[in-house]
Amino acid sequence: MAVVRQYVVHRGTPPRRLDLTLVERGHGLSRAQIQRLIHEGRVTVDGRAVKAGYLLRAGEIVVVEIPEPQPLKLEPEAIPLSILYEDDHLIVVDKPAGMVVHPAAGNWKGTLVHALLHHCPVFSEMGGERPGIVHRLDKGTSGVLVVAKTPQAHEALARQFKAHTVTRKYLALALGDARDAAGTIRTPIGRHVTDRKKMGVRTRKGREAVTHYRVLDRFGDAMLLEVRLETGRTHQVRVHLAHIGHPVLGDRVYGGTRAMQLRGERIERVMLHAAVLGFTHPATVEYLEFTSPPPEVFQDMLEELRNFTPVEWRKRERGS
Image (cartoon, rainbow, N blue to C red; front, side, top):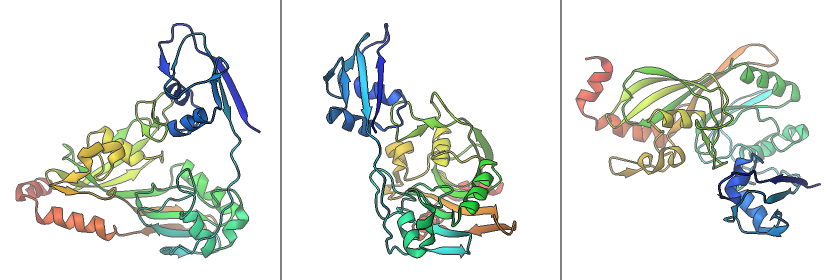
């Protein structure tokens, strides 16, 4: 059954685009999804259909019909997996950059979930559209990820993530040169005020987010960072590093065009890698820690930076 929401534009409200207004209302939909509803005639203003760019005025009545989401039928897909560990309770994989963790708008096939369903039919017994998924890595981020095989394991792992007792360390190639050798970023993160697909620090409903970073090497115009997450908000590393002026190389969303090139070379992927994941096994209560070396494209860029960086920058980091 569709959900129908109605509200009146308050007196004194300046003219504002219909689609942007609906995004800011917090319906949980992206601007593209809102525009699709408007195009389909599911949004009316004073009883008439209008365009996405229509400027709302005080006193007008807006009605939004949000159709019930259709259940997604997941089909197994024979996609190769790099498995670091597996038992009856969980599986730890090394996710490649470019793979989406679970189905979502624009990525209904070829996800890690589809690959897991083919690898181990037990995931189909868990039900839902995200069977076993406890945490995520962005599409462009590579590295270690754990998936639960049973509801009990899922609940136990989820508690650890919520309690911030999971060890999560990333390697990032970031733009610029940080003044300090290490630091902590404590800035709440929430949905971007106008773009629902993005996260940001300027938001109405930000949630606590804490990121610790340490400079491992400097190259003058870029640096290698070890980043440790205390919390796990969506896009946290990327948002926080961009917030302090050092976006992850290759991250157009939060770094813009300046993060897409370095020394005349175009960067084809986000240079962020989940290198370490540690947690307590939900059944044996043993602490397990898994590591993953950065993929070849990451290591190639790192080697090139090290080979062609002025000596004075490298000496600075060593304290010479």
